[in-house]
Amino acid sequence: MKKNTLIVSLFICLVSTPAELMAYKGAAGKNFPPDHTETYKKFGEQDFKLHFFYPNYQKPTKPTPAIAMFHGGGFSKGSPNAFYYLCHYLASRGMVGISVQYRLNNDKVGAVMDGRTALRYIYKNADKYGIDKNKIAAGGGSAGGCLAAALSTSTLIHDKTDDMSIPGYPKALVLFNPVYTWKAGKGSPEMRNNFTPSENIHADMAPTLVLVGDNDKFLSVQVAKTFQDNMKKVGVRSDLEIYPGATHAFFTKSQEYVVDTLTKVDIFLTALGFLSGEPTVEQWHDQNKPNKKAKKKTQ
Image (cartoon, rainbow, N blue to C red; front, side, top):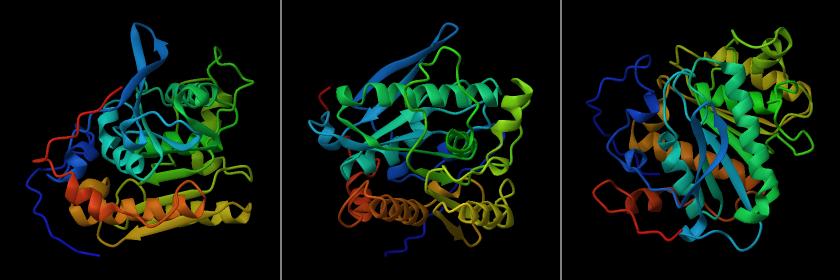
């Protein structure tokens, strides 16, 4: 794999700005336009949307694996466009990539409710969007990684307006430095206790890939290894990739990180049957640098 070094001139402020948006000026920083957006939920006066990326820019005509991605930002900031690049890449490999909007009011339990509603919407409308109901994954970074993990570990957090007969759990997890020791401050005691992923591991969890730097001040390697060990103890696949020297939200800070993490994601999803063939990350990256215009798409 080519190892190109890029100088990042931006100061990464983890508190005031979602770190994954403060990216190097490569393909991961490109604002790929979604192929389609759809409202899956209304919250107060706000419409929460799903941002779809299709293979070949067209809705699939046969059941296709999908992944729902949740951005970071401490449950108070952030935007779905943080994972447009990943959704675009996985769409180029034959999946439906979906970046999810959710509430950003520091209500962690409420955010998981939104994520669950989003998954239920995707399951319910799978035929409409050409999605394989048996291959719907979830993922995210930082707070979004915690949210995605909670969609698999939590069994009690549901929006009371949801149709409980529809599945609301992912079949695989892709987590970038997930802060899965976070505690919830709102919601019923039962839901708050059921929120923290590291405290609610069980045998029915989805197979999981975690990517983390060993210089991450929000998720230590020891915590990540303990999470992995506890998953394995209950018989669930748990892959852990540790990046020496990498800090929090490292995965879009250089071309090397973008290419390597996407390759690891590709290999993991291929092993689970969500993808086939070899990763094409380097070709995708070369074809999608910010100075190249995004291809026009038809909805």
